[in-house]
Length: 306
Image (tube, rainbow, N blue to C red; front, side):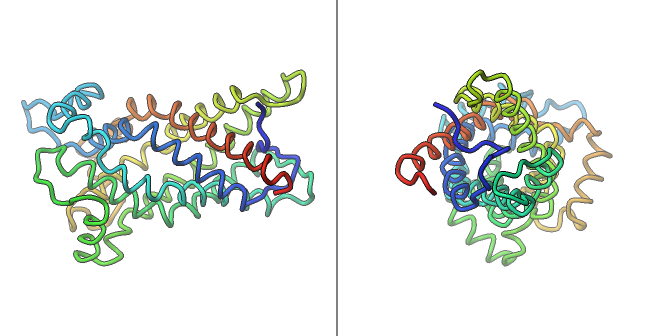
């Protein structure tokens, strides 16, 4: 099996097709990676231990063990309804935005973009996905953390959480953390697609047939996912803290979160939760691009001119 539409696409980018294939790839991403995402969020938002006290979680595996012990295996899947419900439109918008960003820069049907242009197109996709991702991330973080710190269960699922947030603070509360989400996704999405496309170009140049194998697509997708988090992790930590904090905790938003974290925890705290997210990044994003590969193959069969 070979890919049908790689970055340096010889055909002009199709935003509609990318919207549909990206949505399916996103579902594959969430199903394969959510448990480690839950661990990441709990490590990022766990309370600061008092002097002489042990932290709530000693690390990735301790967090996983305590979550399963206290809440069962289902505890690792808390908050999945929000990204799973929103993931199809989120990834669909992301890949459609990327295709549109490429299309706007392509001057001809066979135009090949430079790597800086690919980065710009990838960053452009972050604008599209943030509109849907920000409220979904807000709900997901609250559902993932509400019992992880020994607190009472406040929300009974995604709909209940969204409703209570709206009652408490209107749309502003639902969209809390949007700027932080954009701060993460604009540069990280640019690097994500840049790394993917560069690796696919290398694979294509080394292929005797000039075609790209499914294995190359999966590998490029996995590495691209890791690159995304290396760049996007600091903004993600700030976003998680801001979105999980009670109203009024950080008066100046992400600036207050950053100042508080640096002063009290030091700069290394910006990469708290990096272990589970790196373990998750490769298989989840490999699954995403494998899903896109399958979707592209499906469209090539049923609608070859699409």
